[in-house]
Image 1 (cartoon, rainbow, N blue to C red):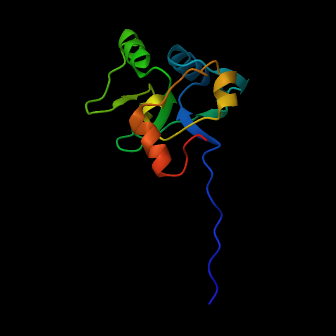
Image 2 (tube, rainbow, N blue to C red):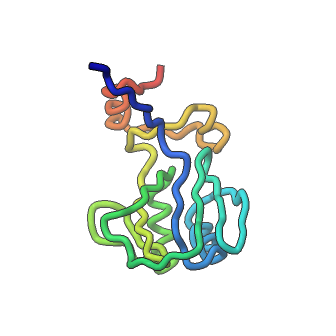
Length: 150
């Protein structure tokens, strides 16, 4: 009997969100996040958020998302909350900072400091975030999973 060999998933390269209008999506997300526009057409845009990217694709036609969502990691969750309030975007009920974008994509905002997700020191430095610290709970979780910094 042979053992099945599987590829190891290393993470995500990108996510694609369907939106109604590319320029409106860039304006909406541009009020919330600092990103670099890589390229844009009438039907798509690619934005870099640090060392990862998101693709906006024109053509959203389904109903708003409920449980299905995208978690975006940020350095300052409370700043996102303040900006959403200033923009008049409804924050969804529950213990997380979730909202629907204008096209019904459910977005969850996650604080970098509190989760196992981590970036290499050189990436944080290039993003201007080299002083960003993890909470003790996040450091413990990283250590328990063999991912603590050496």
